[in-house]
Length: 247
Image (tube, rainbow, N blue to C red):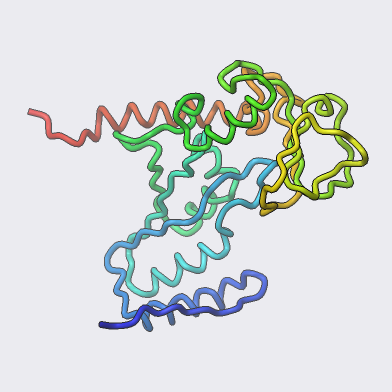
């Protein structure tokens, strides 16, 4: 039985030519034949102003697209479902993937628009996979997350030196034994928690003006536009591309 191979190469500054050459080398080494079609699955989480780089770098994908084309993949398809409570079309545009796919002649397959799929952002209040943690945080403050306007909530991790907005100080949650903020006292201090992320101040309700604070985090109007587009495309696919043949 052949042993699995792991190929690692350090490449500075997302040099597309070097990445492209390396990808072709990997395809040859692993004896892969991406013909006539290749599917590429990036890590596309989100691209809001609170998580500006939570996705695979576009230049890395560009180099992979070109390497696949030169290796015989006439049709290249980028597919993803970000799995969060926001429309994938929104993240697709904000991350620069839309422009990239247009420039490289790559088709984008939005799994959130499939005929049978889970629309996470539609059902986030009751069954979204991140909800157990969200419910836990809100219940610490005596409130359920399904309420239309959750109160402003501040979550601090680590020794935070910055300023905490006045409207968040009444509802501060500290995570980790070493967490502190300029002498402020939290409403709840979760001790003995592993600190595995950088310092965060989560201000969901600070500037909310639409429906609920989550739309502010995701930049309201662009989110709504993408939501409407995906609902339309989902309906379109049900009518014109059904899974069962019409009689």
